[in-house]
Image (cartoon, rainbow over all chains, first blue to last red; front, side, top):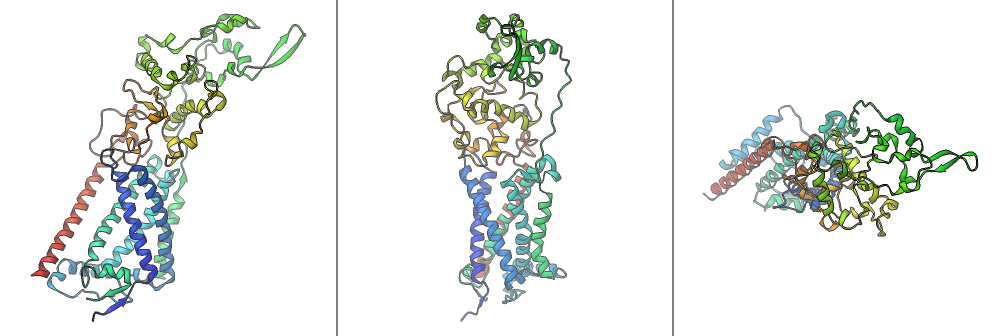
Length: 205
Length: 326
């Protein structure tokens, strides 16, 4: 019988899937607007704008829920790490993904209730959720209300700068999205990690 | 301590960025050239009455000075006149010298009024403006076809106030505002609108409620961008289309081959279309149009990075599958 760990409480699962759907909608509509073409429209431009705006606002609410949840529940501690020596741990985990797992080595860091992310996951989640997200939200709000821009700092290029920051971070999030979806297939079985996010239970290797 | 720092990091970033947010200040006003007003004194004889809503004269019949209300259609704003294109004209260059007498003779009401082509037509000096082309396009437009002959150039371009704009005004916001005010002078003014028609004047905001970011569009593009047919021989399109033919597809502007390049940005847009850097860079001085302004290097870099990630994932997945099966 497989050992199961309850790692993902209901609110985390609910937030996770809401966040995933919103990010997917934002990426698709964002791509559609950025590369809009009358001949090959991915999504009709005005629909893309409306979906992007609405999804963006819901994402802000979802992000606030994420922050509040992490402040008031133990889930927040999963995103903390000591910077000193952490790079070594990230490298070990990356080495495992690149070579170790093909030699049937055991994962270098065991998944436990107090340590549910491996160092690479923890680092990338902190980068996405605590660095990229706040900036992408701020720049998104600025583009939603463009009369309030970083005009004093960037002068007449405020709109371009804001848009470029938003698009570049959006691109990074979309890369993360693809990598995240793939890496989730590395579990005790290819689908077990996806299932975990529905059941809340992590299946150990 | 570390935990609270991590949670407050996004809030601190938000606060820091919000401090930098400032309302978009207006652009630097364009300096007016120094002008020597040769006929100001002479014109003042007319403007002392026609420049005001009331005028005064001595009434010989009742032997006292009286105050009369000026016909609003005969008022000339002197401040507007002296910055207009016709600023160095005498009133009597276009109007009869007999107006010097007061009260004005009754038959002066029948004085013919000049139109643009009477002075500007067939003159090489004005060839660059293509007044004949403008006239031709105007006659194809709904302004001409749906109205009687009383709809003339003056309806939009008052000879007393009109000033050249598209070619000379470097302040894009001012240039757009000026041009849109011409349309709104009738379309947002029921009393003027109903001088020409008995139809209800449609509410501009309601009619455009489908347009996302309505205010932003109204400030950054002219009405004619969507409502006039582009003619490559004219700097400013004059063939106003029926409402059914108005541009409603967002991608006509929000795409790499944005039609704004042949209308609003026609002056800035030359043949120097760069293959690298920003596409449609002509617009970048003034605006950033999603879908129309893309950066060549960022585009290439993103394709390479995305391709690389997909390649690594594919190689990793294939290796996993192969090793597992072997």
